[in-house]
Length: 238
Image 1 (cartoon, rainbow, N blue to C red):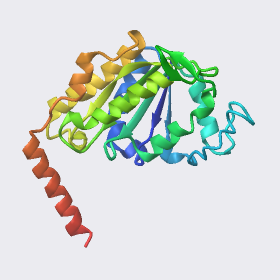
Image 2 (cartoon, rainbow, N blue to C red):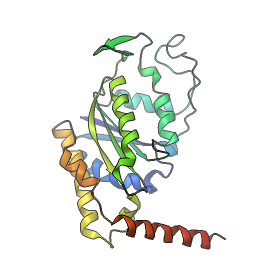
Image 3 (cartoon, rainbow, N blue to C red):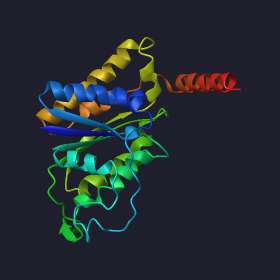
């Protein structure tokens, strides 16, 4: 199985999203998958021009010559696409959205019906599953609702199965394992298990999804700690 992970965090490997992604990749590799990771913060990808040249003048090939072409070639070889993005403004990062907008060359212009719904047929595309990894600074898991819905809809448009998600609310706590070692270790182990599950079973189990989203710090204590952190940052940068 080939798994293609696209990290859309502006912080890349320094971001909280990558803490979860790293464990997921570890589990998938140990289960026998070939995993390729791309970090969009290291790539130059222009926003879509909406010219439809990839449908008409050069079918399957974008008119823009940038790093997206290389990324799409890797995506075409994947069985599973994993989107890893921090939660920004109730959705994915701008880098992630630009990447997805530029995926239009993998589709054809014709409209077909799947389950009586208008869709575009895919070109030669292996990916039959899509999964999501995300983290946010707010405490509650329902902050991810819009992002999950977006990814579920994206799966339908790609004619791929939605394989599940790893959502980490109050994600910054992952940076302090010495404060809550048992709880954080449980989250990371669940992320690792999820990587193994998607290889062996094709989906992430409900148990793993819940474990990754588990409450680590009480809501009000977390908010107080976060406010103290930002107060210190403001003071230090004056």
